Length: 286
Image (tube, rainbow, N blue to C red; front, side):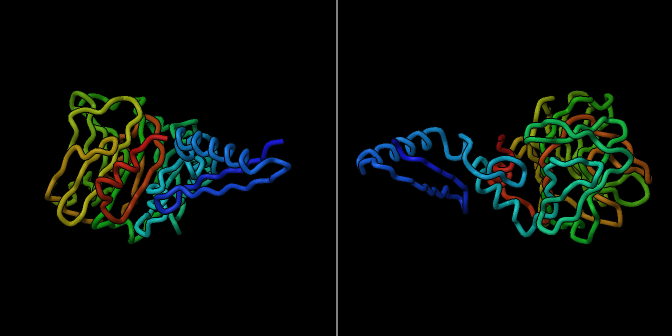
């Protein structure tokens, strides 16, 4: 009889930690060593955690299949919201950030669907929107907003669809916003106009799955597409009032408009500007 093997690979602090338990029944030490070596070589060739070992992580993937740097970011003290969209939106949307309050549907709830990361939400482009639970910590002088999106409904030509933003004042201004703009070809745009209007934009964004993000600090705002910085502005004034942070729609003069039509998944909000390396990590596909 050969040995019974139980192997687990977990990503911890940037390293994979291996443990193995062996039950030995009348097998020579030489055979044991040969079997152990063949297992380790096979697993190393396949890539740690990519062949089904590990416990389920917070988003439904095996822990070992998630980059250790992503696991670290999910416990970052600056993380204000992590919405994996694995739950039923009608019951309140779980915020998996440490101590994070649930998000809520606004006019209408998006639909839970099979998505790029386990489950995600489909927004109808007409009524669906989500509001984050407001608090003073969301008046961010430095911040990062990131998410995965797949556009299924193009905004009308000459208009835009809001992915995420926070309205400011009684008109149509925003403290910050991340939107899909369609002056011609579809493009990604980020910035704000609570003070002087300042925006960065990409020349083009595809209709497939994309990881989109914006980050800002005291000196600049950066726009990211699939983990790479695609634009930067050096003047970005930040002002806030009592408006909520909204996903999937813009709030203009107290009314929701410019709804996003498409899928959305893995939404992150940090109260700090992530580094380029951290942004690249968040953009890794499963």
